[in-house]
Image (cartoon, rainbow, N blue to C red):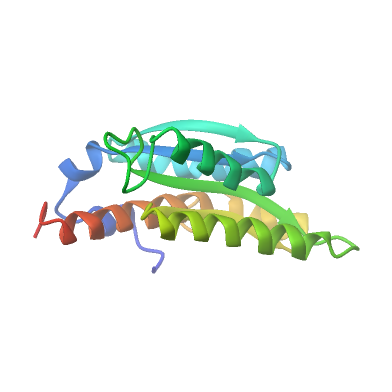
Length: 171
C-alpha cells in the first residue's frame, strides 16, 4: 500500500469504518517505540471514528497468543457468531542483537500471526518492526504520515473494506 493519506483508504465509505471495533495488540518490550506505534494507530482509527480495544503484552512472541485467546472466545474471526472485533492491528519491535534470538522472534511471531489471520479470515495490519538499531525503530515508529503504526491501521482498514466489497456491503 502506498503511503497515502487515510482519506484515500477510507474513500467514499466513512460509515463503514465508523462501525468497526479493532483489537490492537501491542508487544511493549521497547516502551518508547511501542508508544509511538500505538499513538499513530490510534490517531488513524480515531480520525475516522473507529473504536478499539488495546491489549499490552511483553513482546512480539506473545502477540499470537492473544489472537488465539480472542479466537477461542469467539471475539474475532469468520467463524465467530457475533464477533466483538472486526480487525486486528499488531504493534511491536524486535531489534537485532548479537544472537540468533532475533531471527527466532521475528520468524515465529510473524508466522503464527499470519497463520491465524489467514485461517480465520481476520483483517490484519502488521506494525511489528524488525530492525537493526533502536534509531531505525524510532524513525519508523514516529507518528507521522509514514509511521508504521499509522500504516498498520490503514492496512487493517483496507482489508475490512475489501471484505465489505466481497460481501456486497459496498460497491
